[in-house]
Length: 267
Image (cartoon, rainbow, N blue to C red):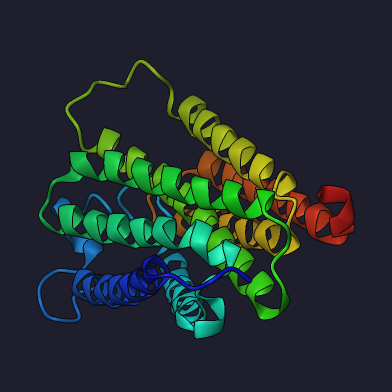
């Protein structure tokens, strides 16, 4: 293993501090310190009932799992034995950037700056996609790092893809743009078709079993909860129910295929 440098120590400390700040901001965004929760901010544009492509309320419990995975990743990253690891060296600063962008998204949403949430979440997806590419191109990590890094980045990216769909839909729905020329059924199917195409491409192109599993699990979860939301909370949309269930099923099948095949075939 390479010699540990001061840059390694700085990166380790930065990720721990960034993780702590991100969790504190997330708690603030949930209303834990008083004030409105995210779903009530921005005039309710990001609520589970705001649009036909908003996941139901229960979907957002996945954040608990994502934050737990990030905490475990940060702890492993901070261990002396991981300081000079090529995986953590390559991913550390990008993971920190994702935490900063996630905190930024919560902040602009809480401030009611709905339009700014789209470029922020787009940057978040881009950063996570960079983490995805780095991990798929590196040799497989050893031991627990292999499972933790792949699952963490996969879950984070898979959920961010679905969240982007909901976010963009909310911005259009609460804007002054006249979109009545486009039938609702058409844009629902089109948006979900693009989302599932991206998710399936990520899952089948992951090369790493845990990475594919994470993306598939989170994306399937989010897409399925769009259907649950329309069936329970509203607004009603049979097209959204059918399309989101189909999208979730396709993503799940892709995940099963990616996880079941020998990883040696995906290298």
